Image (cartoon, rainbow, N blue to C red; front, side, top):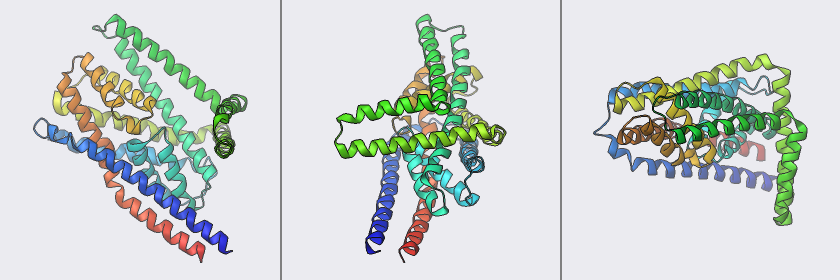
Length: 347
């Protein structure tokens, strides 16, 4: 009994430490962004800032609501209010310090556990949400590439590059869909990963094999939910569509703060390429890769380089840093709640 209590307390401390480290990482990235904020002060049409912030709120609430409504199809019974709060927190972390979604997924699983959500169910919900969200992202990319490739001033070499990017995007969607819905494909991929881990020490190899089995089960659970209740996905898909529209709208406000009126093809073309580049980089929030790609594509479409860079910086501050800072009080509330639950469990 004493050993079980000590293990429980040690696990609670480890999870709390992981959450704190994620917060500190986010603050570090945020401080790096703030160093560039001074360049914005004298060049911004600040009348665009309130609608940008409002659309950011709509985007975060929409994608978080999509996560919460997935609880039903996934067979998860949990209070909606706390789950929405956890979703907002984890989305803010995922956007700012994500490494392929690991930070947000882990935090979501840790904070959902006191509400009766098993880690496997939380991961399955997160993976389903990520799959649907990525479909929207690549749909936006397809529209953006079509607009860019058919632009009158498009350089032939740049057009071929974009066409190749389109082929890779389609391949990624097909590959991820096959990995989700085909157990044979999924197990072959995971088995290959485990085989590659044979160079690791025995302990690491065993833990990776266990994690592979858990991931396979989570993906299988997500695929079953999508097959069992396809109509139930209408509401989360609607929320995700609203999320992407609001996100693009927030960027339009940031860009128009420096350039005035912006054509739709310039907006969608530049944003889609930048968003996917940031996602593919697996860097925290796509920092550097997303910003550079977005500014470069905008510049190729006729936006001045300085205006493009400043717009990207403003967007990062508005869409990534501000929500993270705004959700810090929710972190404190979640940690206090987890501490109380851990104490009650120990007693």
